[in-house]
Image (tube, rainbow over all chains, first blue to last red; front, side, top):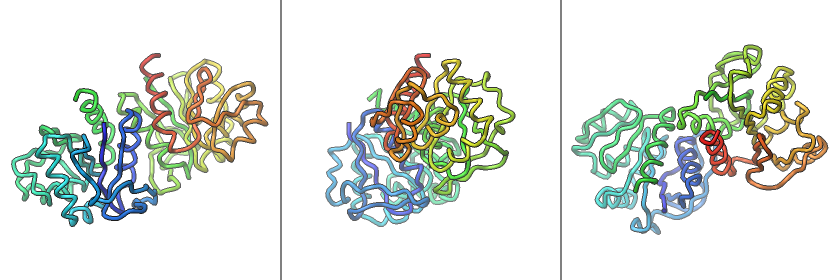
Amino acid sequence: MNALIISSDNFEDTELLVPYYRLKEEGVSVEVASARLGKLKGKHGYEVAIDRTLGEIDPAGYDLLFLPGGKAPEAVRREERALEIVRHFIDKGKPVFAICHGPQVLISAGVMKGRAATCYRSVAAELKEAGATYIDKEVVVDGNLVTSRQPSDLPALMKEMVRRIMGE
Amino acid sequence: MNALIISSDNFEDTELLVPYYRLKEEGVSVEVASARLGKLKGKHGYEVAIDRTLGEIDPAGYDLLFLPGGKAPEAVRREERALEIVRHFIDKGKPVFAICHGPQVLISAGVMKGRAATCYRSVAAELKEAGATYIDKEVVVDGNLVTSRQPSDLPALMKEMVRRIMGE
């Protein structure tokens, strides 16, 4: 199984590192993609090597997409290739996980209309405007789309993520 | 099941937060103890609420001890009550996990003689002087004592930690 994390500088460190380590614990191959090669630096200073540029990614080769929060989604949502990759996962019914500000990328990809989801509270208005039903809950599952609000939701989000990996 | 994390300021953020979230994912109750009440601040700025002082802790009420690394162990090893708690876990055969500089606390508690363990590379000499066999491996298991070297070992350490929780 291959997982893809798309992010940028100023990611919320735990929202990238916790799923990264959790996926590795399950023996899942994890790659981090961003607009350019090099390293990403988190809001708290953690550095993560970028495995591939967004342009190099063939999303057909990945089974799961994870979108961490922080300030990174503001940059990721402006990358058309990131939005195409998101639409591939949604259209193919492959699991997509987003936390905190991560759902901003889903909004820009135009995939939220009629979906139930959650996000960081400051993103809720934007989520509703995009046609989604906002639910204030630690994990909201709507088909292949799984969303959470904030770092303290990570245990519940990881539980759901691993349930998907094991079951599918 | 109740888990206890003992740490101090300047903990290595992921080495506290990753096991904290992972234990919660398994439904384990987790408490953070330190010399004084308030909040601990990690090397990367994450803040964690302290649930109890070391003086308040009755170690008989906990099933698992976790010692994160960073600069915190330098402070923790000077707290006699922390060392007494460590010796309780070791003597009772309850699982003790330590990563990076965390094993410094085990060294000061005087429990490393004849044990196999690992630690951050700069701590290796001190570990050997304490009578332990140092092994450069992501996870070293010696009975109830489980040690790791650094944050990148967290997936393997978490796998071993959860195996213990499930099996015992």
